[in-house]
Image 1 (cartoon, helix red, strand yellow):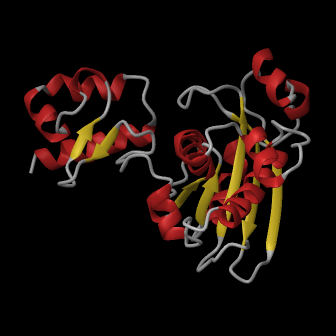
Image 2 (tube, one colour):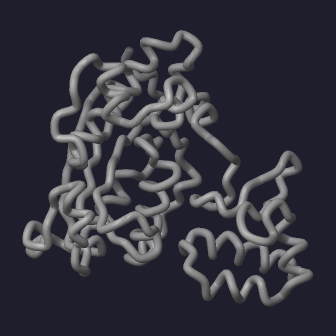
Amino acid sequence: MELNLKKPIIFFDLETTGINITHDRIVEISVIKIMPNGEVTERTRRVNPGMPIPPEATAVHHITDEDVANEPTFKMIAKSLAQMFLGCDIAGYNSNRFDVPMLDQEFRRAGVDFDFSAARMIDVQTIFHKKEQRTLEAAYRFYCSKPLDGAHSALADTRATYEVLKAQLDRYPDLPNDMDKLADFTTQNRNVDLMGRLIYDEKKREIINFGKYKGKVAEEVLASDPGYYGWIMSGDFAENTKAAFTRIKLRTKK
């Protein structure tokens, strides 16, 4: 089933030096942009992360330091990449929990202010886990009836994710071919920040979703424990998370 699009959608996948959002870096990004008229554009770009690629990361995606030695840094491509994403919905596999927060962190380091909240996020992994409980390779075999060649390369994984979503729409009549409804279906929590350290409750209050204050109203915690905000700001948290706490902190001073 082809996607019912009202605006462009971007499928993307990252290969990185590791899975730590704040410390690791992108080494490859693949993007497939689908327009409402069916026009498809594919782009893959390797990136010099400015740090050694650990052997355990290379063992997964097969990208070495030598492979990226002469590639541009993320900062060099950040503005053109943000322009490509502008005005698009965003889809990926485990993208809501990893790829989008990682990309946001890289944009922030590069000084590019990109508003991910304007996009509808469709996470194909969430659909799969809610329906079948498997990995991307198994999902591809299950939905597309063929093996995934080149798994763990950004382009192969991105193409597979796009094909899997179309096949999921064919398989499940109750799965809506509408990006608004798919975004709702693939949302695990109503996140305030991209990492889900803060979530909204039914009253649209920001609730802390980790640590000793998990389940507490963030505004009340920041008012009663002034040192907590300083701990967040100096801690190993994504910049997007720190920005969300800062917005709440500034609001409590009014």
